[in-house]
Length: 227
Image (cartoon, rainbow, N blue to C red; front, side, top):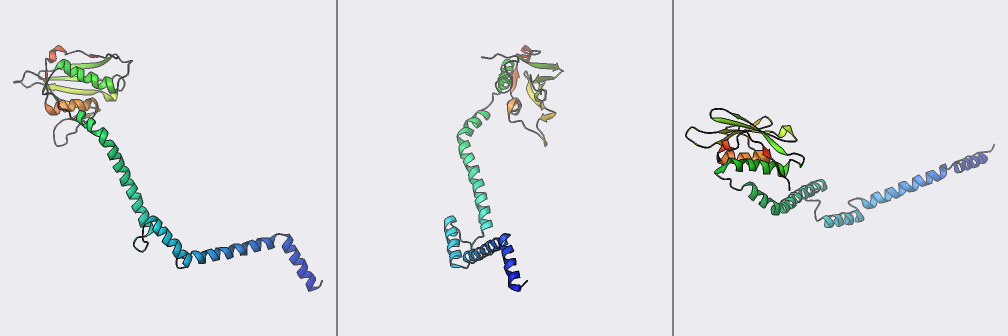
């Protein structure tokens, strides 16, 4: 077979197999990529124009700060603005809550008022209508009265207090508060309670509120009433 026939046959096979089309596509793609790479280079006219447009759009000079640095700045700024927005929104709601939480507690209250405080705190925030009472377990010693306040639903929410009466005093006051194995009391390693029933009791503890006529309610539990 003559050389011309061999070339013609090979070229025909190359075309029929689709290789020629693929080769052309590959070369065209490489050419386009090369042209774009050249045009988009930072030092090309188009690249310079594009860079300036980006800098103008995001208001930075890349000679002064890199894009990763600017990205971190934007991220941090968004975080700070988000926190500020939360604070601004919370201000209107926080003040009345603080006013309620920091409302001065009395220096003296009756034992019935004391039980009413326990009732209101748990009935409003925790106990559902199927519970008829908050059970109180009382235990008396010479100077102390231990009271265990049993939560109707969650035993881990049980609160224990110790009421103490000095010999020269007529009424009792809270000397110890316990919840879930923690003691809330004064000292170097003191723990505080600032929410829920323990929080309300802690305010009485901190004020050293005197509770009068404790014998009138000794042994009682608290009956719950629902509207």
